[in-house]
Length: 83
Image 1 (cartoon, rainbow, N blue to C red):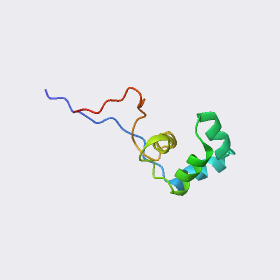
Image 2: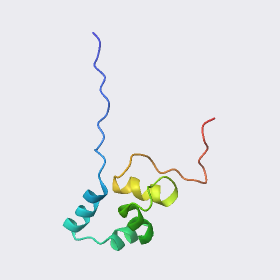
Image 3: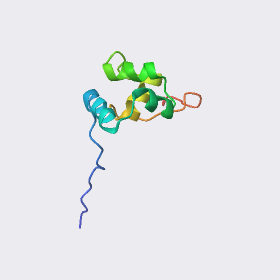
């Protein structure tokens, strides 16, 4: 008997507006969240308003942490691209 394979479910991505609303609903400031999560406030704000799209570096890590994009955070010191 064949078994049915299902893909693991992933949480849907959030919009920038949804993330900003979550901050307001929780009463958490961007500065506080940034500090507690080790990010620069200016980078978090830039991601939330769309000045940075989260492609590389800290903006990528912020976007992943906020649920704006799928991905993972690699340690750049040990990352090796697959040839």
